[in-house]
Image 1: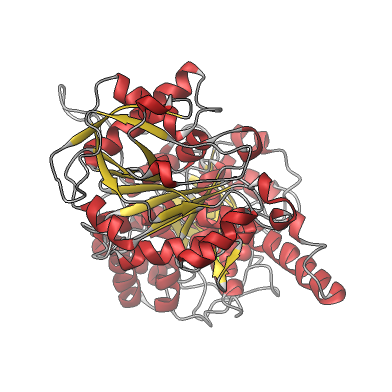
Image 2: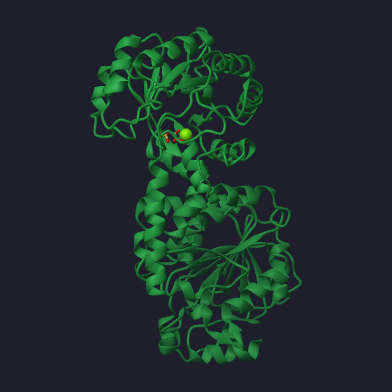
Length: 553
Ligand code: SPV
Ligand code: MG
C-alpha cells in the first residue's frame, strides 16, 4: 500500500511520518522530485499539484522576504517561515540550511529546532557563513573538510527523530575545484553520516553531475538541482541513478512574473477590470486556506453559536409581481421605512436571540450585502424552487434552526412562542386567516389543516399538529395559514436534510416548494406541531403589500 508503513504482522499500517517520507524519497530506486516553496501558500500549492515533497529554498525564502540570499534573513526568521510551511502541508520539507547558520554548535540547535517544527530534513553546503548564492561570482571559498564533517556529525547527534535527514551539499564544482575534490569531500561527508549528497553544478549541461554519479557508484543517495542544466532530459538523471531532483526556485520566479504583470497592468489602467479574469477568485483563496474548516469549528466552539438557534432565510427569488421595483434588486432588499425588508426581518431574529442568520441568495445576489448575515447562493435560482434553495444551505440545517421566507414580517413575540416549542418541527399558523385579503389575482396561500381547529383561545397550549398543507385546500378543510416561519429542533433538522436528499434522488427537488417538503414529512408520519397566532404578520408580494409593510412597522 503506497504511503503506508507495515509494522509487525497483524498491526494496522500507519501513515509514514514526514521524516520517514523524505527518507523514503532519498532511498527510492525511482527518481523523485522536490518542488520549491517559500511560504505557507506556495507550500500548499506544491502539495496540491501532487509533489511528494517540498524544497524550502534559501534563495526563494530570502527573495520572498525582500532580502538577498546572503543570510540576511536570520535563521530564526527562516524557522518561522518553515513553521508556516510545515503547518500548511502534509508532505515533507527539505530545508535549504545554507551553511548551517554558523559552526557545529549552531547546526546542533538548528537541527533540534527543525525537528520540533516538523521539518523533515536539512541540506547544508560546504561553504562559509555568510553564504553567497552558488550562481554568483567565481571561486567561492569552501569550508574546511573536517570542520564541515564535524558539523554533519553534530547535526546527526542532535536530531530528535531517527528518520530526520541531513543532506550534505558539495560546492566543489561551483567553486571550480573539479571532480577529484568533489569526490574527496563526498567520501568525508558520507563517512560523517550524511544521509545523502547534493552535488551542485552551474554548467548548462549535466556533464559534471554525470561524471560524479559514475564515480560515486551509488554509495549513498544523490540529489541534484538542475536549474542551469534544465535542458537535460529528466530521463538522463534516472539513467545515472539520481535519487532526487530539486526544482529549486520556479514558484518564486513564476510569482514574480505574475505579480509584476498584474501590478504594472493595474497601474497603467487604473482599474481592476482588465486583470480580474486572469487570476483565481477570492473564493479559491478561501478554499486554499481552509475556511470551510474554520466555519465548522466556529459552529462547535464559538460561545455565541453554542446553544443559540440560527436561522435559514430563503431569499433567492426576484418577486416578479413587483415589476420595476425588483429590476435591480431582489424583493427582500426593497426599502421599507428606510431600510431593506430583509434588514427588518434580520433585526427581529437578532432581537429574539438568534445567532447566525443564513440567507440563501439568487436573483441579483450581490445586492444582498447586509453586514450581519451569512450568505449562501442558489445560482440556479431562475429554474429552481424553494427546496432547491434550501438544499444550498443544507450545511446550516442542524441543531436548533429557524426556517423562514425572506419576504415576511411578523411580531417578534411570535418567535419567542415558536422557540418555546420542544416539538421536532413547529409551524406558526395564522388562525385568523380569513381576515387576510388581497386584490392580487395571483394570490397564493400556504393553507393548513390541523389535528384540531383553533379553540378560540390563543393561550390554549394543548398540542395541535399538522394534518395537511398545500395551496389548494378547500376552505372547509382549512384551519389556518402558515405564516412562513418554522422551527426545527435537532431531530427535525435531520429529517429535513434527509428529505431534501430523498427529493434530490427522486427528481422532485428542483421544482419543489417548502409546502411539498412539509407535506412529505407529514405523510411519512413526522409530527409537525402547530402554534396558532392571531394575524400580525404579512408577506410582500405586490406593491400594495409594501405599503402594508410600512404601516405594519
Ligand atoms: C536555493 O534554492 O536557494 C539553492 C539552490 O540553494 S541554488 O540557488 O541553485 O543554489
Ligand atoms: Mg540556497
